[in-house]
Length: 265
Length: 265
Image (cartoon, rainbow over all chains, first blue to last red; front, side, top):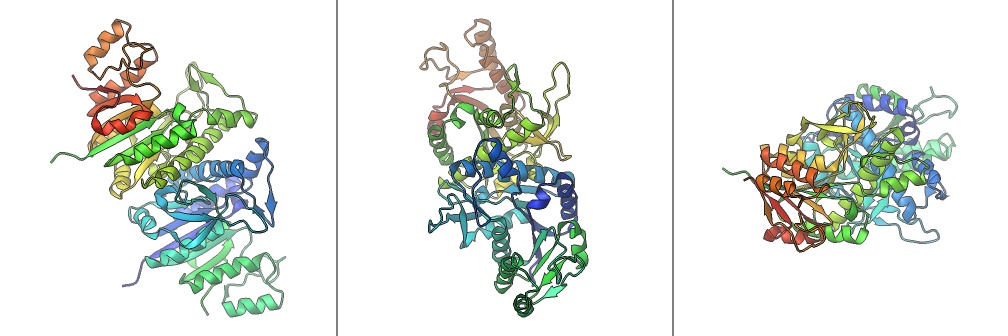
């Protein structure tokens, strides 16, 4: 008996920051049939709220330094404001969403990132046994669509700020225990582009071997490399396919015309 | 066949505002056996955050005026910061909590309060059909302990700020469809007191008739009257019993030594 399908869809910051784009995206997400999970990033709202509250936003190499005050802000914004507005909008479009942090139902437990050269503060790293796939399956079986914010916990009462891309891929990998999973990264480009200035130059499918070729020849550029590396890691760990494409094209996903599809071999 | 028991416990603002008291309370809540629900108020954190963000806090007769900016703040604080920290602490004490706004799983739908003399803004009123008891039963049957923040939605994408006492009593009344429910209000006094200056003067049980007597004789004072009125309303609508007592005594609830018990006749 083949497992049923589960699509894990990640939506990034740019769309989160634009109310109109976000609602259009959520309407499309709600229309996707079958079992699905949404993972959302934070966007710039957390930094805006922090600045209004007189806090200094500290980033190192694009990663947020999460001290106690900043943890409170990201918990408020990601797990509160953003998550609950997304859930309410999905309910409007008849998708029975339920918003989750990692603490809710103990679905994702992380560990506080060890301090090496940089102290990232209350940043959580996902481990191999972080995802409670049985608890998540309970929500899916009960007919709910889980909506994950990028907040986890350590199991001992401490919330942790966690990368949303990493949560999405950890979910896709761990839920293979119960489902045939696909991972869909939505962002502002049409997919992996042969020519970064031409949105029509989408590479439709790409294997790990082709990825190495594109990388060597410089066609795939710096920012895209870790994204694709993570995606191929997920495929190596049992995820059926990974898609990368434009959030505003999500309605094309069912027709398999969405962005770039990463495949095994 | 008699229904199984469900305890709905409401915790108010004073305890929410004190980290040490809150954790002690949550440890006691986690230890209560059987099916249970926690409903938490907001505390003063929302007003503090609003002030830090340069917003004016507007109250009329103790009720918050919730304009768009203030709705964002209470959504952040109630459904985000407070709710997720409570859930993470309950997980620490091995209570499999799941935090809910009314939008999550569409569990509580409210209507925006009609504008009469005062425009309360995005304040939500609970109606007779507001509570989705089947969805809540799904969470309880799956072994989760729902933790409600005082945020609801209108089913059309709009979040609403809603009174936590009202949510607690609406849950207790509506869940009688599936369970024998009790409603437990936790606050900073030992119960309904005969002498407001003597914490040892707790009235152990009180009927509706006695309440009228105490009210007429001035023994029960102004602030307590609407609280008790609501509680007797809940009993008239099928709730088995309502308790009012000190949050720090919650461990005495199982021994039936907790605060004042309101009973039918």
